[in-house]
Length: 365
Ligand code: AMP
Image (cartoon, rainbow, N blue to C red; front, side, top):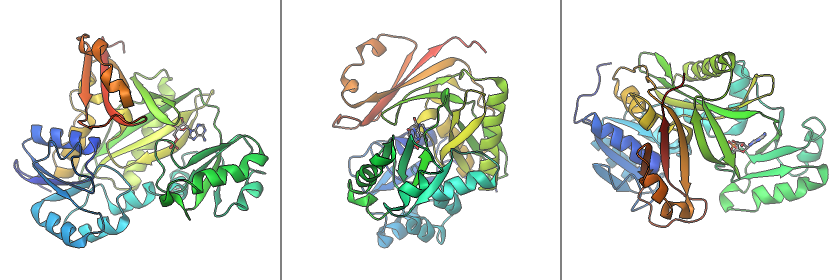
C-alpha cells in the first residue's frame, strides 16, 4: 500500500484522551482527524480537525463519518463489534475487526493466549453464580472474578479470598452498572507476581513488527499509577515479553498497536493478563523518552507509513494524574525534567484520569 498523503483524514472511533493524543500525533505528520464518539466536549474533540458526537449504533452517523475519512482506527476496544463491522464494509478499519473481537472478551483473550503458546493464570469460565464453587476447586483462592466484557480499571472485578465470599463477589460484579448484567465472567487465580510489565507492539501494513521496551507498571485499586522504563527485569524476561507481544500482533494481523499486559513471576517467567489493540496508558512514557512515540507509531501503521525503531533516549517514569491531583502539579511545573500532559477534562472526579507526567532521567542502559 502507498501511504496516505499529507492532508488525508484519519477517522478515530472514541474521543477520550487516547484519541486526543492520536490526533496530536497525526497533526504532526500533516494528517487531519475526524473523531467519533458519544460524548460532547471530549478530550479528543478539542484537538481534532472534525468531530461527530453520535452513538456507536447510529448507522446514519457512521455512514456519514465514513464518507469523510480515508481510514478508520479506534482509541478503545469496546467499540461495539457491529459498528466496526458496519464501517469495515465502507472503509479500511485498522487494527482489525478480529483484534477487537478477541480483546473485547476475556474468555476469547485467554483462549487466544493459549493458542499462541503464552501462559495465563489458571482460570475457569463462569456463566452463573452456581459455577463459582466448582471452579474454586481448581482455581484455588485467593482468586479474582472478572466480567468477561466491558471491565476496565478494576470495574467489573471482585476478589475472592475464600469460598464463602463467592456469592458476594458475583453480586459485586453483576449488581453494579447495568452494562455488566447478564455478562459471562472468568475466575482466575490471584498471581503472586514480582512485578507487572507491558509491551506495546506496533505492526505495519507490510507485517513488520516493532516493539517498545517493556514498562514496569504499578497499579493501585486496579488502576495504573506509574510506568517505569527500563523495567527491573532480566534480559531473558524482557526478550520473552517482546516475543509474546510480537507473536500476538502477528497472529491477529494487527495494523496499528497491540499492548500486552503481563505478570512476572519470581522465577522470571511470564503470565499474560490482558491485551488491547490500541495505544495504552502504560505506553505514555514513549511520548517524551523516545524518538517515535506509541501514538505516532500507530498513526504510521494505519496510514501505511514505515515503522521505525522507537530509539529510547532517556530513563523515564510516567505518573498518572488522577482526580484532584490535577490541581497539585506545582512541583512538576517547576521541574525541567517533568513533561506534563493534561487531557482537557472539565471535572476531576475521583478515579478519573486527568493527565500524566513523564519524569525523565539520564539513560542508564
Ligand atoms: P485487569 O483489568 O485484568 O488488567 O486488572 C487490573 C489490575 O488488577 C492488574 O494490572 C493487577 O494489578 C490486578 N490484577 C488483576 N488480575 C489479577 C490477578 N489474577 N492476580 C493478581 N493481580 C491481578
